[in-house]
Length: 156
Length: 287
Image 1 (tube, helix red, strand yellow):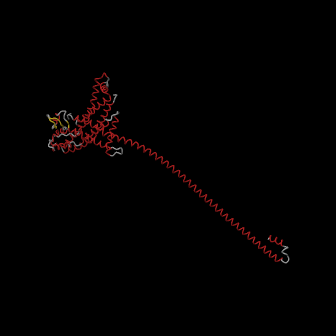
Image 2 (cartoon, chains in turn green, red):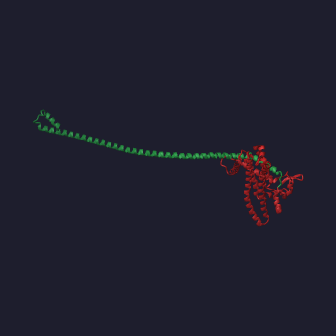
Image 3 (cartoon, chains in turn red, green):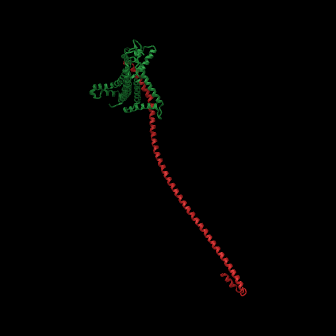
């Protein structure tokens, strides 16, 4: 417990070491810490921005989804409308075709009827003429009665 | 075992004596007794205090230097994290109490805090381990183990605490004169607090408060550590008394060591904070 030169030794050591610490220990550590602090700040800002961007993107996605849902509904409605239209059209076409076939058939039938009637008429008139000829050949000159006969055949 | 043959008072005295190197009767050598050590006068050196003081500061310097070299701006791992925690703690203390631009104060505060903490920490090493190793190695080298004094806690040596406090006092004077000018500094001593008519009283008051700074710094640390060391020594003397005393002493030692952890940290912190405050006062232009 004597005061001696240890005092001076300690003082010298003290000055040397605070100089060394100031020169070689403090700056790199404090620089690294400050640098990291800055990076953390930047990172936190970026994270915040990312979060808001994410929220925005989600909103946009929601909008897109609802939009496309609407579109899909529209497309489906259009398609079903078109389908019913097509069915209607096909029905009309079918009805028209059926009508045409029916009318064609009835026209043919009418034609046939007329033709058959005409044929029958001709044949009957021929037969009548034959009969008349046979009955009247003796009394009636075909030449004189030719006008009357043709008139008759025409009325038949 | 050489130390065991000592009486209790000799044991205590042995533990409180430094290994002193100086001049005895005209030639240089180690003091063999406490009386010889005190007769050496000022130009002698406490080798043990100096050795552990330098050892602790070198440990501090290299650990922090390694941390500084490996410091990355990325995620710090355990060791770096610990070092940065200390740095941040010191940096915050400096920011809180020191309001001027001085690149020396923060590194100095860090040095003081860690250095004093490490020197105080030597107190927690069981008090006979290192002295016993020293005595045995002296004996092995053919010396006298009884004169192998070995005080391992540098901060229980007033030379060490005064050495630091006086260095800080020199810095206080340097920065006071640098920032206030010699005239400013002297007028602060002479004309405050009672104006120019109370000059003698001013000089006395301010002079005392100025001188009290290094003395209180040094004596506070020395007193606390010395008292703690003595209690450890007294507890240690119980081991040789009786088995019951020995067990009781063991419990006491653990309790005191746990309490002492608090004291050594607190003393290091107080020394650091007061240094910062004194430096702040040295920079103040208006008193």
